[in-house]
Image 1 (cartoon, helix red, strand yellow):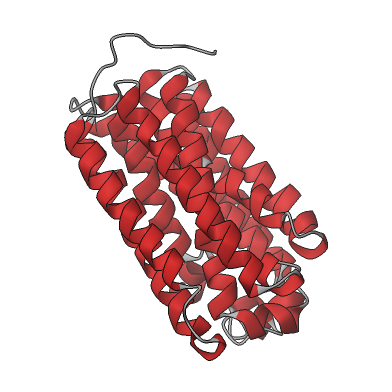
Image 2: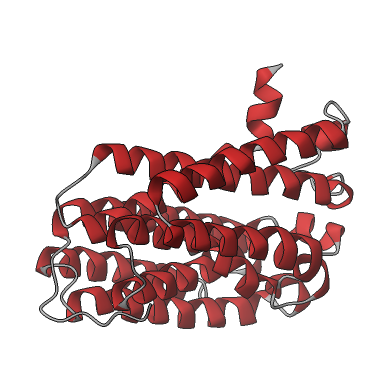
Length: 294
């Protein structure tokens, strides 16, 4: 009974956003962790993301039944009704947003709201079905949790927050495209105009390579501007060089091996972002000069 409601919130996505929220929090905390604030930030963010995922499940019923990966979801099987799912999402959202507004700060609330609107409104209801640029829109919502974590502590949007947003958004692109390559038939059958389906797998590999480089540059900005130490720089660049190596290997594999390559590329992207996010707990530093935007 409870299991189907848990899976309606997409636990995999919740865990990913939990980790990236931790990453943003650790950058700002600089080794001094307020565990109550951390708990409230993580709980509020997780509930907001869970709410968005439930709404996404409601919206995507017609798509999900065409995809092997999603055809057994509760909304597709009608084991949970639309009204019940929407009430569930509403309760999760109210609790999550309330925690961020009353117990964290307005910045955390604002970026949670931005992420929610982009995920539910601009991505799920609109661009996912209509444009090849859907991944860019989705990346904005995916990059919101680490900014929530950062601003929960910093109580401002500054250069570090901007670099975190850019870095995590750029990471989302090749990460999402890798899923679409190794689940190519699912996306094609559902008529989703994501890059590998709408253009080609070769073009996706080229753009993925570019985004890996851009991600590396953006995340190095945290070291260059004094928000993280040399240990971070060494680990980050070692991981990024290997991710780049896997990206290059994609041009050498045979077409029938694309699925296996994409799965490897995807899995390493998860390892990379997890390691980097947790690494901030011991490598974040105070910059000598900080640029505050608002």
